[in-house]
Length: 308
Image 1 (cartoon, rainbow, N blue to C red):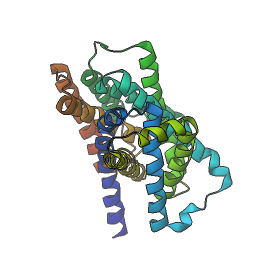
Image 2: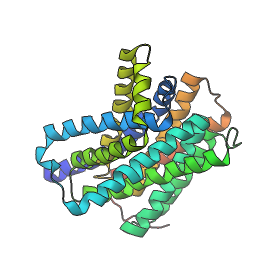
Image 3: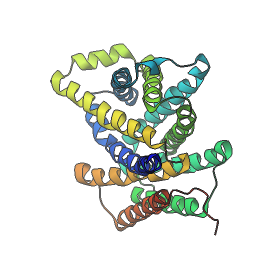
């Protein structure tokens, strides 16, 4: 019975990772909506991370109050998760969204599976299997196609900022895997976002941000928008992704989450009237192929596949 339960839990891992990617794909909507109120990228990140930290702390209090106890030696780990990963990648990504099309920002963010796979091999000694490499190539090629390979609207500054988001995002899977060996997902997300929120508040020009709230024509609508931003682009996806990391290798999780640029592309088409090209359609097919390939592997339950 216990073996069957474990298998069922393992099978939910890829689904949780894909769910997280779908929610992250909606970030562009909220970033651009909040930008209309005059908030800059760092201030939008601060709103998102601070409210998410509050929600995660409430969840931890309800689920496992003892989870607030962490070892002092792990403070650098959570600092790295919160500031070095979540805050850094969010500032880079939200800035990139304001500098280029949503799909272009998403492709640079989703160089992350490359960094995750390299770091996983280096630090966790994960096997670099044929299936993983094929899925990585399919996913990355798909991301390039949905972004549009012409580079339209791209600058070198935007390119490096977008690339920074991919590196920072990739670091979450690596440090998160280490943290989950010692703590529950609820402790990991709560402390990660506490550190991230504190870091964001320190650099967001709080007085200017407060003045923008005060100047809002409809404060109620703005507050609702802020809450939705935190819930839909941080709380739900990060909790789902962290839970998924319990049963999914970091390298595989990074590739599965490449569903995000596909979602971002669809949202860009539907909400912001960005064009759909033949390449975008092919890219979506390649991303879905990579996800299906890895999900079939996950259902098999064996990580020691043969190299072909």
